Image (cartoon, helix red, strand yellow):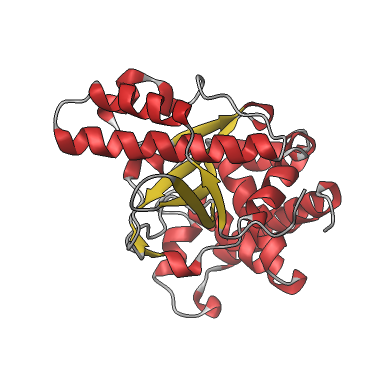
Length: 262
């Protein structure tokens, strides 16, 4: 497998055009039809790319292949069965430099691959990858110049194959029960991204911050927003903070043990 895939160009096949025309014809209105057409082409382009690198996908189990979901939502997902989650394949116009992700694709995604089409729709360029982001993050006006290389998607995909070992760990079970994290992959993807991109000395602090985000209003998360210094915490809040840090550190250590080292 090639390690450098940033800016890879993929031809648009006749099958992709046929699907796109069929799905677009189902829509009411030209604007919606055009959106579905490009969404479908983007999914097919990523599907064909993953076929080249021998990664199995399932078009028919993707929401973008469901006529009701196509009608109701702006979706361009591609389901990857062996990790039981989809990657979102967002179309990009030739001169477009920024993009906003629709609300309906901001959860339950491994990440986002951006597909830029040429003017005559003969081929498409895989611009890069955006790792999963927390649902409260800003999805407005994402700068396409700041995307990660597409090879990072392949790295995340490989690492997700090891997640079953994390889910079975008692520490993760304790965290999931306490914070009622749904879907569980959301937290794991955030932790994985931290391990991949942050130095080890930042892991505990980053992990603690993530767990704080899952606490309900009235808990430490709400209290921390109203206090300027950690010395302002009560003893009970400080103890809760230490407990969150211990849980986050234990999860990070487990992830670091099971994930492949690149």
